[in-house]
Length: 202
Image 1 (cartoon, rainbow, N blue to C red):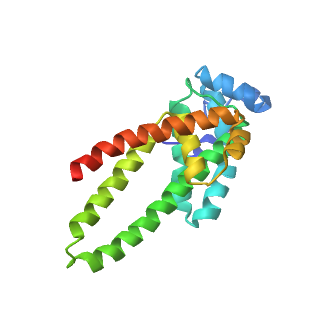
Image 2: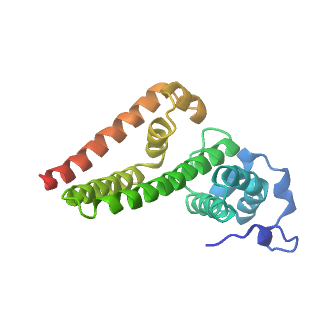
């Protein structure tokens, strides 16, 4: 499913329904959860430029910024019936963009470090250990991605954004106890998955 900003801004596009422009974000979320295409189109029209600006400013790459925003809206549409947004729609989308930015920057950083390290390790006896470490990182990232959506979001905000439990609770409009519960569940799940991998390396 590919969305082009210019495509959805054409006035004769069949998905455009002017009555949705007066809807509040809350009304749009409700309509979206009911599968209303026009509600999604209005959200896209309302927030595409804002999200693109956030991503482009951080990444300095319009292509990657557009890809990130694309992924956000594809995810929003695919999960329209299961959405749980406890903050404003803008805040929800902005947080989603920021975490995808972090993943892209982290990928760039580790690609560079990987290339540098492999050059010096090609004649090193510890190459096998290094490859095992890379496998572990891949498994960790996959394990995090497999966590329930809210649990994953809280974990990344804590570990990648270095936000306190109080800050996370305020950002997501949930209690600190709920944040603590999500973190506990995430850590327990990750420990179980990673411990099995570490046993295979012994």
